[in-house]
Image 1 (cartoon, helix red, strand yellow):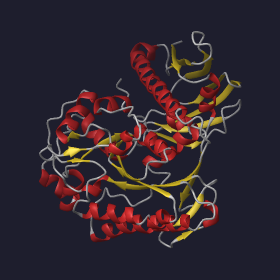
Image 2 (cartoon, one colour; image 1 turned 180 degrees about the horizontal axis):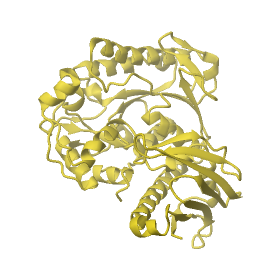
Image 3 (tube, one colour; image 1 turned 135 degrees about the vertical axis):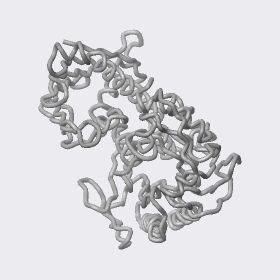
Length: 458
């Protein structure tokens, strides 16, 4: 029976490493982002008898994976066994050991798997190498992300765990942020239109939010808003604008009137604030640009006035292109690039500013605990690239050619002239001055490193 074994030293204690895996959100953090996964039944912890059911696979061809936990030893190990799924058998033992060379100051993350493919042993001859590569790829990613997350949380281990309310918690950034925070021991409450267990209900359209439910939270992260990735008809532009202004104003005014106000409101914005600026290097000191997105971002940020005037620290997240293959722009790019038909957008000379999803959520944690950060913050890696370099790098990481450019007229035909000009062809060379001045270190400062990690191509 094939086996796989990987051990990695992590700079923490075995007890904290075990606790990280036992907390809500660990499965989401460890799921490889290039592999579409949908949770059907969330496990109630990792103790013996807990059951996790999820769907895995692309498009409509998803397979059900049912994992049962057993072999639980508090602080030391747990095991999950596949009862249904793509493998004939799969048994995964997670162990958390003290490193004998560091007298307990470093933990060893130890994963041991035994598995069999269906129709073993014939399948092992035919597809054994592919299965082995898949497992190695997945656990290389898992260990790197675990190391990254633990390191980030250790930076603030001496601070109290936080109660954080999040709007847009089911979106790309909100989902990643929620699981990142909960695995660090923080408490997260989603603010959503539908009532969710442990959450807070609101309706920006009706300007309805129950203030008493927000009493006592340490922070609010406001990420909700209508997607801009659509053709900008008059109706769409109105929805995009109103969703940001109305929701932000409602949050800000509600927080301002609380008896126990949060320490900080971290509110969404975007680098669209700067408009199309060519080769100009853009820090947070740059003035607003021109165009629909610039106008939206300016009004979006202005809508936090009530919170700021009430003495709440307010931070505006001027977010760049967030790289995560499980959603957003990168997910949309991948099918074409994997088929070898990706290419430059227009001339390819426009600058693209970007940030990995791991640095994105880490930066929000850094902002949460850094009281001196206030006002606009560029959430962008320190190395923006031209679109042609982005295209070449993504193709190289995927080992695919990139020789089919998309002409401007094609983009404008597909998206509309204004949408294409401001979202796909605008040049924004943004750098993270505020973050770096306040001590934030990027784990993935280069595009190749970020894409290699997120696509499992290390």
